Image (cartoon, rainbow, N blue to C red; front, side, top):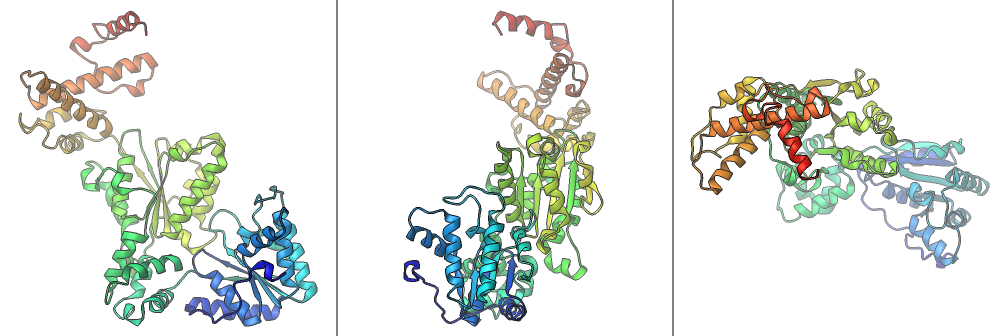
Length: 534
């Protein structure tokens, strides 16, 4: 029977363990001396499988993996996977003094091949295996990732009342050093300050450290800066492709100086300046709410922040919304896990007030409450959750409680000086051939215009100028083109406000001349629509 399993992980010499892994193995031995079963809970990537293999060797035991379970299932032909798994593990319980089940969630995942998703199936299987191990006097070790922020994956262990929990912590600075020394030799550690590296990127996994070694293999004696540069360029990857995000910086957003200063001091600095943060015990705000009317620059601030964070930026927005809701939450969990693994980082939720009010994903608010409370792991507290909202009244009040969303920043309509700056920023040198416009004059007639409106005005003015160039018409002044664009946009918004009976759409003063309402304006358009059969 054992040959049918094609056993490949027979006892062999232990690989070089990191200090944290050695500590975990020694603690496991102590617990197993006092209890018939232990549960190893760990974040992903810290070498839980390595720890379990070392424990199994120490007791002359056997590690059962998902591959073993699948091989058993295949050897039996058409058979329920859950039954095959149970028989596979029970067989090893009958032949070894210790059986370790690696990656418990994957092996006992309901809904796998040949199974229906039966409520409590993991609980039933685990209880049966636990009882079988007790009857044979076999030690049982169960390993799996600890749930970071979305529920306890090992909740079924309540059915094993005598099991003890062993927690394997994240890799330390000394673990980083050991991995690099094992793979690259001592030369890779002599010039690197691993405390600085660990402060900057505390959540690297063993897999990421191996990738790091591949990049450093050609560097004769890597420095701390070399290591950090490789990590930043190749290992810290948000879910936002910065090359596809409009290149913006805070100083290119006139009128947002106070907001930019707050974000720099309370979010960016604690995340990007690890040395200063450790010395002064700084921590980025756990939650930030950026709120204000549509078009006042919330998303632009997010774009600028994405570039400022240099890869430590993860975003959730309306594109995540799906039917059924399970797919939505799967996407969200994936992004949150990546943000935690890449922490310290920013998790940016755009238009959160809209997402909170979509009925079939109503659980999002509860999910974020758990994340902000940081109930599961230390890593969670290193993620800054930043939400934007047009209407803060639609953000659940529980999220705004002190200790969750700690920083409230309001975007407002720009004042006259800010409007002039925004116009100047978007005009650039577009009108160099006809002379710069009078920005103060245009700023004076664009009261109530948002930054988005002003950007639209500049774009329309460029198109008006381009039309004259294409038609070989005499060019007007840049100020005139901007004034025409202002009048066009204002007239369009007034007409739409009347059609929809929505005063929030209206901007600027009442249109004049040919755009005046009722004088060749709304009435003419109405006639035109009817004549064209609209």
